[in-house]
Image (cartoon, rainbow, N blue to C red):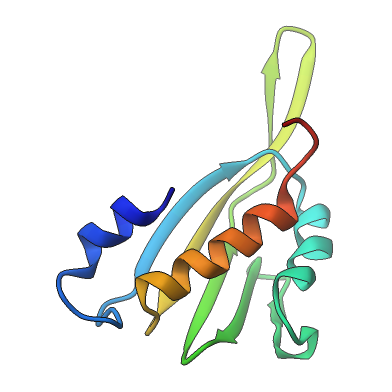
Length: 115
């Protein structure tokens, strides 16, 4: 899923020299995010949470992952109201495989119902 994107940004090395930034608009609340993000890391004590700036950072492999949350918004579709936030991922000093590995864990942790 992320292979093509990461292959393009790799530009030839195993570990990316420049940080890789991804953005996602996700249907969840900030409370849900803070509750679930703990399940995406092996050791919860490595998480640094800055609730004032809506940022979480933690070491991953030989690099670091920083996740910043945008403002909580509500999307209206007819009479349905869905809360959502824009999430910015910054991957520093990680290889494409390491980024894919974390995103897989993140996606399975944050997956909601359906098939």
